[in-house]
Length: 263
Image (cartoon, rainbow, N blue to C red; front, side, top):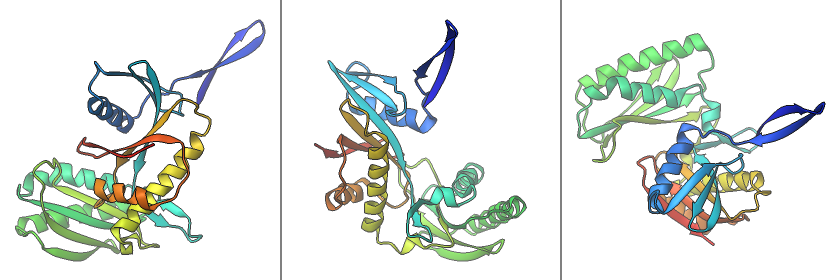
């Protein structure tokens, strides 16, 4: 929440101001507007965090809170942690590798990297990035086939490379997942991962939005590799989490929207 003060009659009057949306929040908002029938059916304005957005649908005002579903690991105390907070720019590195090397990757395949962190030292991270780039460039030049798998050591960190069948609607050719080397989230069965990720997101957002009194929806941007909307749709039936969200909508990074819960 941001506030500003105006000096009036020697007293400061503080006002809450609306927060600008981050790029991923704007992406989710636009996809939901399309899902709900387009700008002729729904208009929106930024909220005051919470919520992120207010939708105006016919004569109804709906609050919308947005969050991202990311892979999780567990800290030493057993508490769920966002893996993205435990690694050093590894997800950004996958984006950078895709940008630089995707023109070398045949259209029919995709390359998936399983990276292990954190790579905490900046100098070692630069070495890690350069070595991985050079190795991946040589690997692509070998013309790998779907199903190929290779485990390598990059700057004393384990990296596993998988060659997959590339989806027709995927704009990426190189992607990846990153996990803390101090934990092992990959041993979790996919439905279990979906339940943990979903429950953690709902609990955190319910706590944040408990004083939002308008009807409220929760929008989830899926950034957890290997987990699809069907996994989440089943997961929400399996978990027991109290919340006040009237709808929970899942937005895939392709832009597709799936409603997985309605009260």
